[in-house]
Image (cartoon, rainbow, N blue to C red; front, side, top):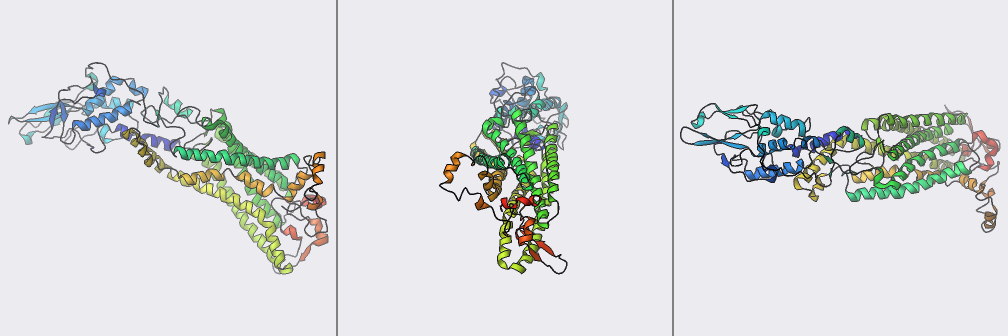
Length: 632
């Protein structure tokens, strides 16, 4: 998800590496502009450049660039060069000759007719600069300090093609003094080079790569130009914040998994009546079951499940990551589709659309086909993996995520909220009509009967809407977050791992992120609360083999009312006979209310609780069993 942004971050994080001839306090764009006060000084020495300086007895020092500045620059270069790629280190001697003679340039005194001397700097040849740039410098970065073609208004090059020509006439000298460039690769090496340690500043991880693209595909986030890896998990959050998010998932997900498992046991294992209501709960519960199952894979494997090797983020080639990503994608897509169908179904029930049960087969087939397709497609793009900033394997790239989840979610949210408004309108009409006949008590009863399914629809809508808004907020700000991370990396290198650098790593809002993760993991708890503790589920358990045995028969003697099935059933003649909140139409003969609504409204024969229909159930197709079921 983050590949394009990561490339930007990688490039920006090397700005300091490539500022070869700058310091934090003194940056010069042109190094060899005429300076009448420049001096030639003996080289102060540095282990990185020992035996590589062309003329250690005479170093060009301008008034704006002292040798102490040069030493700071070469210190910085060495700290990065220790993490250089194998491609760059393959020509170690010549590359270091370039860096050292560019930082510590040779000084050439030029005599003037008035017996005065003006000192000129000898720049390294442009060909050497381009050779080292190709080997050691990321493509696409055009910095003045390492711009091999940079020339000033006096036609003086930092890296001359052949020579720099100076006009000394204003100082009494000739107008065309030429200073030949230094071919650094031809500089004689005097002694043994100081070893390269192969280290990276903490928390970056050193990794020698032979095939960069292959390592990137495997999940190594290499900093371009050096063999350093971003740590896994990435420093988007502090260690304590990562630990808190993992702890939250380790607590909430198992609880949610247990809750949703109880729902499935009730409606699949113990239930004997598979109607519209049961099918809706079963498939919604199964979707959430898969979402929580993917978390259990993470909990069981710990950080190793998403960071299988130091500095490597899990990818689709890791079986556990591929399985967790596919399972979560199928589950979350299916859950959002079933939620939208809940809103649609509730509206159908309240509208008293005939043959509503015939829609169930379309729900099941359509939703599962869409969910399977949207879960399989990312496999072909090798998109399942663990990306920076999250917990667990999922679709990585922004464009892929938008296509297979967030855009479909947007459609579902629009459909769902549309039917929520329609439901409100239908309930308003029904409540208004009933209250005119039976008064306020009937009106309040209808509101109480409908509030439960309406709340679960709104709850899930609110959670999905928050996740939707938060995702696109983060996506819109990701460039800024990666720029902050680049500043963080530069600070680490320049200060050799100062903990204060963490102040630069201001990225994804921690509280918003943990809320996002929490909302995706409490669906199981909510569904059990709304659908697992009803009179129907109580009856399912009481009539199941769990309670129909000798041991329970003995316990029943101590609490007969609790275990009585008759206590949760009603007589057909009762006005409140329902099937999970939907009154059967056969009660109309005994207790329906004839409502004559003037104007554009039709005369309707409406059962009290039929008007209070619940999305959780519509048992119109099983009227003969209406005395066995109760309101949710």
